[in-house]
Image (tube, rainbow, N blue to C red; front, side, top):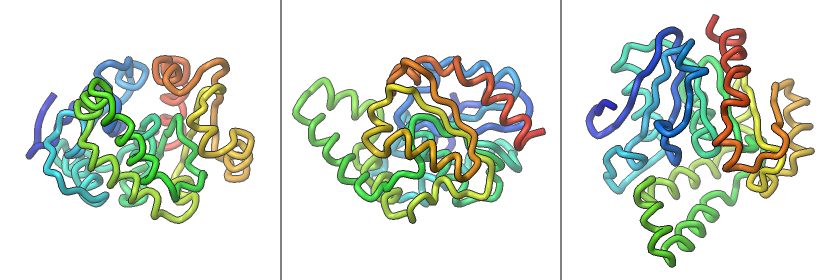
Length: 233
């Protein structure tokens, strides 16, 4: 792991670049070998998240800028992005800011959902966690709660489906038993939205939100193939 002005990042593997935002997932605990065997995988924790510094004041431009600073630092001209859940939203959000993003793989989040209430949901989660010392300690170890609230507030202000209508290849996947996805958009409607946009997706039977994260090995090989075919060949 390396540090650049308070931004912590890692780089593993060789080949075309895939950038993986680190917001609420410690990717060091996840087997990404299906990607690192074929690509140069750069994980970046914007300030306010993971082990990066926590200045206490945040905006989306800052989160995106932190990732782009690391991309510039390691000499990457173009890159695909990959992420799951909140990290997948950030992967798509990067594409809104930069034409350097060639493709986006986002799992565990319905990017076509109405996200207007996401800031309130984040504040409610933080308020619930504050009532449990162990849960609150977990939150503080993962990110600055203010950073998470700012992130979701800014996502909530985007036009409907802006994170899906990127003008770049997009791949989606989720577990069939993912109640988080279903709480934001019915899976049937999400499928219809993706089909209408000709966006490829995979639904993995028998897995809920957390289990899908633990079993990314079920989808990573096909995502690596998709990256190679759609944007990085």
